[in-house]
Length: 48
Image 1: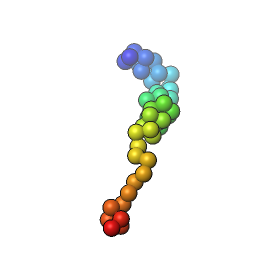
Image 2 (image 1 turned 135 degrees about the vertical axis):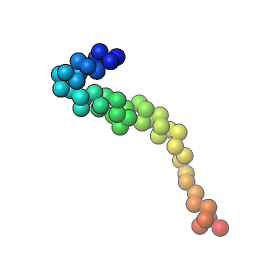
Image 3 (image 1 turned 45 degrees about the horizontal axis):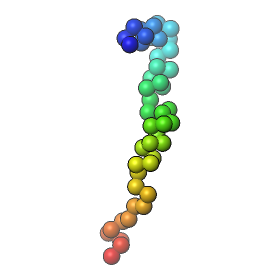
Image 4 (image 1 turned 90 degrees about the vertical axis):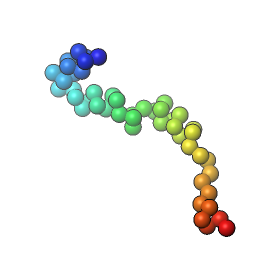
């Protein structure tokens, strides 16, 4: 893996390498994370 990173660095594609590992560009991971989020959020302080 480090040899691939060295080649990418030598070609000047460092920004693309960082984008490849950026979680904001992971559609599958973001979808799975959204499924685990709670559907309803209740503020108990004002719910009395």
